[in-house]
Amino acid sequence: MNYTEWAATRHFYVGDWLYFVFDKRYYTVLEVSRWNYEQCNDSEFIKNISRGGRDVFNLTEARAYYFLSSGGYCYHGMKLSIHVQELVPPPSPINPSLSSATATSPPKSTTIIKCY
Image (cartoon, rainbow, N blue to C red; front, side):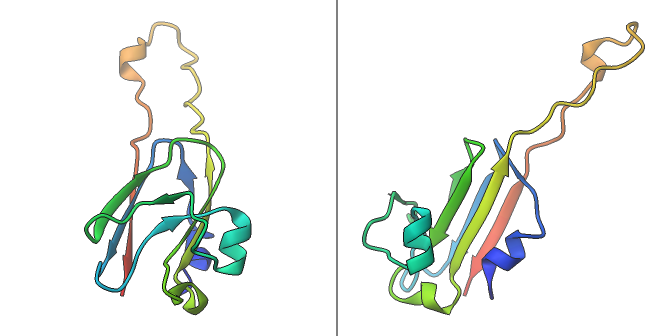
């Protein structure tokens, strides 16, 4: 599966979470630079987010994020590139009598990524 093609059809916002599900005996999840992502280079990663095969990653900034799996799996499509955007607050109500307590912001989302 090409995870980057999958991600291209989705929207990611600051505050969202990615949930990676994988067999920790075979796979890892590494955050890498764009260059390392394009080259499938796992030796100069930014952060290893692999802990137990059910790992979460908080998208804290509006920017591009790049992830891959080490051990050559990246060459078989086990890599992910996403662009995270700021969540734009909903417009203020036109009627000033509406209290701000009635306005709600969109819920944060969690995206589950299963690696087999």
